[in-house]
Image (cartoon, rainbow, N blue to C red; front, top):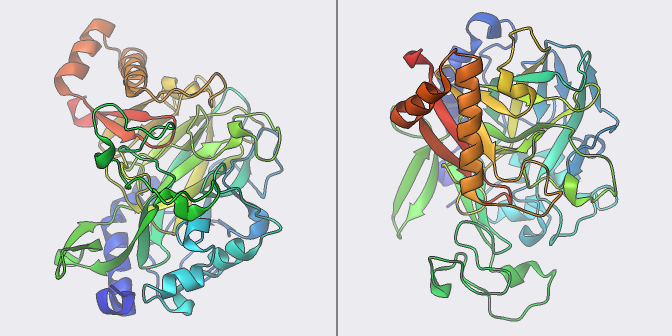
Length: 438
């Protein structure tokens, strides 16, 4: 299924317009001055097309880490003032990883994408073996851009991250199952997890005896997913359904990785800095509600906060069960603001735990292992669920003035708790407390 047949450049521009129009509400009020509804007129190569932020941060090899997040004390690649806006050209790891050949030009060419439509920064990152050495078995997959130093941020503060716009840089993405991970992954001993048989493991267990380190030993599956303008002008991902039919789903661009420095610096490949598990500093939080118009609050642990981002998504279902979502590079614009205790500018929970907010809802978050796996990995969804409920209770009691027992009853009667993801070693749950109820 080629991009030229399924999508076409003209439809990409129309779809980008539809996405920007759909997100037009984010430009109202305080957001209007920070971004404009200028539409992309081409593939968003570095420094090409609309840049909404006051500052611009490309993803050059000097400004990214591949598979790891910045540590406390990391040297910032950009310094801004509190309240400033910044546009970041994020790069998806899909199409550049080892099991795909670490050559995005060749990989995407097999799916009908011309070289001119492959991002130049993705090509540079994939080819720079000196700056981006990789251990495919151990390293996280994400290309992480940053960190950004925000003036005035101190440990104990909150960094308020407002998502102002999320523009697809290319009209395609990829959904992958790899490393034998995901909701239906086999166990480390090769057996099936509780509840399913070995025949039901996905992707199917490889049996060819390839050695550790050989990407082909995992039975990895990557599904190329073009984008096109579908019904009512909605930009959609397209997947095959049988020989001639297809299934389409609307795009919902958001950043999977948004965080601040949390762990001490150790070895460059310290497991506590791996980009896969989310922590109290955020990171690979993977909550699809945090797209344009949403706000993400992060407790600060370092001078300047040291904000970073990566793992751009074109769309994701709750749970992200196959391991990745529809991954695709985005041009993301944020406003970064420091919030002090007592100011009322951030939810009280956010001074100790990540917290989300949309136009319609508050999102208390729970993680199964928020300390960064310091004491062994915990991926129990029950743990994440309990923490999400406790954080919701704290918010309702301290920020909304509810009696705690009444708040507990309210959560049971009227709040949906959703699975953020089950695949990032540390699992996540978030609640949706609807503002219209208050």
